[in-house]
Structure formats: structure tokens, C-alpha cells
Amino acid sequence: MANGSLAPDWLASYHAVPRHWFVPDLIWPGRADGVRQGESVHRFADPDGWLGAVYSDAPLTTQWDDGEHSGFDRGTVPTSSSSMPTMVFSMLAALGMADGDRVLEIGTGTGWNAALLSHRAGAGNVVSVEVDEDSAAAARHRLARAGYRPRLVVGDGSEGFADGPPFDRVIATCSVHRIPYAWIEQSRPGAVIVAPWAPEYGGEAVVRLTVGDDGTASGRFVRSSAFMRLRRQRTVRPGSLEYLSGPWPADGAVSSTALSPDAVGGWPAMFAIGVQVPGAFPLTERYADGTYTLWLHDTAVTSWATADWEPGRTAYEVVQSGPRGLWDEVEAAWRWWRRRGHPGFERFGLTATPEGQTVWLDSPDNPVPAPH
Image (tube, rainbow, N blue to C red; front, side, top):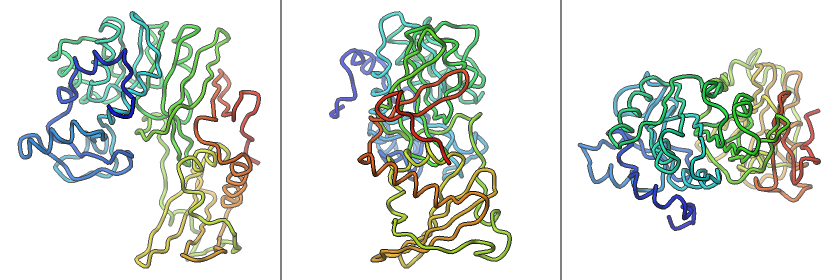
């Protein structure tokens, strides 16, 4: 891989475990940014297209709607995939594995990552947990066909694997907004945990934590990411109409802002905002004339806000309703981020303890401010 994601100590595993061994016949190739899925490709209907997709640096959706979807069209929500190779190998490199390390993987998916881990550490040192029984069965078959038999467990990944600790390395192939403490409890002091982490607002990034001997884990974010959420931590996101007490703008208070809705939509900005504005998420409603409305909702279904964007404007109409002033919270969080020089993911870190977790900037002694 030209961008340097493939570390030298993973080169042998990369060549020994071809990706196509672990990709199902029907896939939906995505863009390299991991945000949008394309049209389906079937191995037998379009073998060249299928193989080209498999060996592109793109994620491949392999399941929709927790397996309830069938057919060639896209489903509603993608729920399993084969991650883009540069992401796979950058996360494996972040583990900093040594030969013989005991590894816990959260999210078996297609089985490719488990096979790579098995080749590197030995299958007897790898435990992989998969919540979906059908996905686990298919992965087990692919792994056995390739000659690997790691311990594959069907269960809730947030619980880890209590019969297998202590682990030297933990890697998650699904995102979380809270690091499950079981992962720390089941790791030895000095162990490394690599996991995608994202606030509800968005702006996901991979964090690399080192487990301390005091029951905590701490470390920095290393790169942006876009993974499917751990099922236990999914949040239901009601539609906009469920927030309105009457015809729009219902009981909303109208004001204006000089901050463009565009400014709060970039990935690093969303991350910094989401850390400070918990339990809230954005939705964008786009119109044929090129304008759009940014909706902000809280997960408790008590508050909402809108900000209207039009080209050439220097002031934007804002409407807010409910006990939380969601636009005010978002704007305050964005201005905090701007005052600190628009820091990227690499300046942020996270510390997880039995009591909870704290996101910090530059140093654990400098926590990101809690919401007011």
C-alpha cells in the first residue's frame, strides 16, 4: 500500500492472507472515505468488477439491517463490512504486537482481520467476538478453509471475553462512544487497546490506549475513521417531526448567527463539538436550489435547533426549542475549538476509568471542558 499503512512486520501476513478469501459473493463497494456505499457487485455476475472492488482501497458493505435485508439493492443501514485495507493495516500497526501476544478482537465480520491476527500471533492466541450468528458462522467457515482456527465466540462485544484474559492486545472493528470497561479489565497492565471512538455528534477517530496497573487506560487518537457502531451502543435517532409540538417552527425561538452551518460540519470540528455536546446529533436537509437546513436534535427528544444556510450570506437564521439551546452549545464548542487553533485528532486523547472516560487536549491534565 503506497501510503505506508502496511508496516514491515505485517507484510508476511498481508501476502499470506488474501482479502478475496474473506469477501462474500455479493458486496456493495464504498468510497475510500467510508461514508457512502455504491451499487452492488456480484462475483458471478461481474467477476472482474467484484475482484477490482476487493483489491481497491475501499470498504465493502457485506450486510444491511442486521441481516434482515435481502436482494441486490441497498438496504437502510449498513451493519457489517470488510474495512478498507489501509484502515485494517494502520490499526494493526497501532497495536504494536509482539510474537505470541494474546489478542482479543471485537467484531469478527468477514473473518479477514481474525485471519491476519492468527497468521501473526498464532490462531491459539486469538479470540474473536461476533454478535451476529450468521456472520460468525460464515467467518468460521472462511477461516477454517484458509487454515486458521482462532476461538470464535458469538456474543456481545461490549462484554469482551471473560474466560480468556489477560489479553496483551485488544482491537475493535466497530466504533464506540464509551470504551467498555470489560476490555480494560480483561487486559494485563501494559496492554494496548485500539478502537474507533466517536461522540454521538460525529467525527470518529481511532484511539490507542495503554492499560495501566491502576485499572485505567489512556492514550491518543491516531487517525480518522468511519466504522459501524457496536450494537450495544447504538442510539435511536428520531426524525425531525417527532421533535415538533406543532407546525414548524412550533415553539421555536428565532435568532441569527454569524457562524456558518458549514463550519460545524467538518470531521475534526464535529469531533471537538461532539465531545462537548453529548447526546446530540446533526441531520442535513438539502434543497433543490442548493441551500440546506442543518437540524440539531438531542437523543432524549426534548430539544431541537435549525440553522439555515444560503450562499453569500454572512448571517444565518437559527431556530431553537426545548430546555437545551443546541445551536448555542454547538457554537460555543466550535469557538472553543477555534481558539485552540482548530486542533486535529492527533492532539486529542482519552482516559478511561471504572467511573467513566475523559477526553483531553494535548495532555491528560487538560481535559476538554464539560458541557454547560
